[in-house]
Length: 618
Image (tube, rainbow, N blue to C red; front, side, top):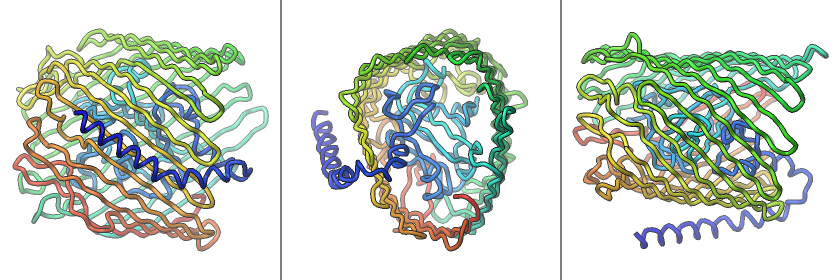
């Protein structure tokens, strides 16, 4: 064990030395006034970490923000392409293009990562995890990844952390149209269009709007050697409208829907699944006084699939009502509220029968205090959940931050969280166990951040202990304990037209019963993103590398590590017109992150090139 930790320390040190030239170069331009926008991008405002706006260094959390510029530069085909290798993030997929995908935060399971779109939780109530593969990244303009437990803020499933996507809000005055058309390898076709903007009506307030649609289709590629191409298509639509009154009160509504079909390999035979992913919500926020606001949000999320080959049909819904109150007292902020959620799997059939129980509700109350005693900052939170299926859970969190000076902050935190048993865990025919207890966890983290005008660095070490880990192959059971230890180092710089981001992860996810590594997780990963703006031209690339992982609990089935390089270039050839070329897996590496039951690899796509032409604000 000590040898592995020593190796990780050497790797972290090597990474720090490799980043030093960029850091020195950035620091020499730190006093230039034209670097102010870069400072905002490198220390962005984050809302997911505390449910209140805080800059990254004020959150006292390990956070990563992927802004609109990053999404447009990288132009990912799938959402997992954007997340893969980010700090604390691991991804495994059953092939490319709409195939089952899992995202792990800090070594916890995919169903232990809370996923939201504009504050609305999206997940399958049967599987427990969201269907990342069915979301078109072009429908979003921002992603926030918060690592570490957030059960005291969000309730169940935020053991490893929270991933939240944001849709365009409409910030530019007047209508801003945009359209993009493109395609490329594997018979891929992409088209998207939208319009957004805002209008001011004086004392009447400001109205913001965003409407968009997209269509993606591909002939796909084989997911096993010698197999058939597996096609995928996705059609998505978005509508978002809000109105802010002159006194700061606000009302708004959101609707996002994606539907389509994906083909998969069913024991050597081609099969397919029709799917629907949908979120919708309305909210109203009343500015009672300058220091007190109250907000009510009503939302619904749907995850639906139908697979004729089994046959099976799943229709899960999650309906939530959340009441939140925020009080500002000088430099301090207090938040308190209540939440009611109803999960259901009505009209669902597994192919082996229906669920014995088809719905459950969850009631919760919560509170949070964000205290600023500069240079000391204290954040505390507490939440009580009462679920009719698995009982009561109390979660809490405490974080301390100390600003050494204007650029350096130390942080320490302790938090608890829990993972709710899914409907499959509890009630799936011949598998579910209605006596399951919820997973519970406790995490300790120490971190430090350096924030400068043109660059930043962030380092963290953490330890998570999970009790009553839900697992099982023939039936769902609670196993006593898992332990996850890890270290993260990330950095970013913007200087003289260069943009660079780097992330290094080291992880020890262990099953304490066997001392084996938890399956599906790599223990080391590295991601480097480098881009260069040159007038009307831009070029860039990403290098993502991971070591081996195991596909089974016994650690007998080993999957080799891999490294892939993605390249990109853009050309603004006329006002508001842009062409972009991306080449994914440029060196055509053969790699897999999971296997079929018979031991064959699920193949990811080889080299793929795409061209798109876009009009509008980019």
